[in-house]
Amino acid sequence: MGTQRRLTRSIALLSVVIGSMGLAGCETNPYTGRSQLLMTSVGQEMQMGAQAYDQITRDPNSRLSQDPKEVEPVRRVAARIIEAAKRSKYSEMAKQFQWDVTVIKDDKTANAFALPGGKMAVYTGIFPIAKTEAGLAAVMGHEIVHALARHGAERMSQGQLTNIGLQAVGAAIGLSGGNPMLGQTTMAALGAGAKVGVLLPFSRKHESEADYVGILLAADAGYDPRESVGLWERMAQLSSGEGPGEFLSTHPSHDTRIDQLKSWMPEAMAIYQKKTAVPAALLPAVGGR
Image (cartoon, rainbow, N blue to C red; front, side, top):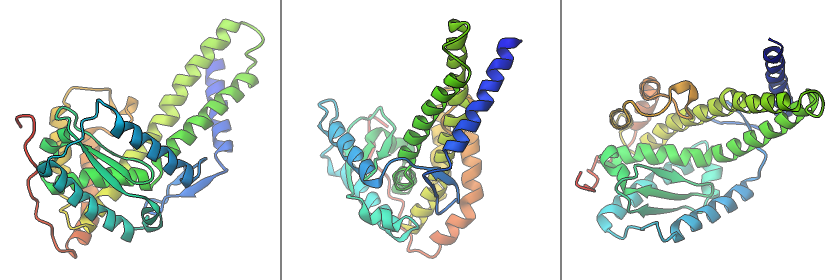
């Protein structure tokens, strides 16, 4: 019981340390009003993004597609989403970015990403799940929001802050005295507690934020935002029975995600109905699909 009380007090102290330290360096997300802790500059993030993109595209294991059937639809969607971003509440950031997009020929990887600074990549394995350019717009809108909203920098800042908080708690509970093994065990448990209680929920908020603003960007670009629901329903079918529950996941559950998208759909449809609709052209078949 003594160990349990010690652990409980330590977790509470960690929350206070992180909360008090988080008062500095906060910004507000323009869409959701959520407070964000950011400990790096935009320039630093853009430099890191460019370096990561260069490393990925130069990796001999990364096969860059030159097939117009794969590259052209990705570039079309990217161009429209970028223009929508430049009209959005992230317009200042979007106009700073040096946008670029690459298609990576990997039919088994259903993924895409956008790095700080606007460097993007789409893996061909996402095509069968997205199905149409409108579905791809939901994917790319989501990824672009991660970059524009500075979610990567926020995760890094939160991780740095958590490490500082753990060190402060370690000093406060006296790791140097008493039973050293007990201190190490307590700190290990605190690390797990910090991860589940602080870092993962932040990541779920990032994902939901990217889903929400992403469909608004897609709608403003002329793509039917309702395609996002079908996209995540297909994703759910593919990943059925895989991965941890929502509490221990960095992403919302598929059901939660789909329910949220449906709740935001009236706002997205109001934007879409004012635009010239872009035909939902089919994406190319890959890997026999």
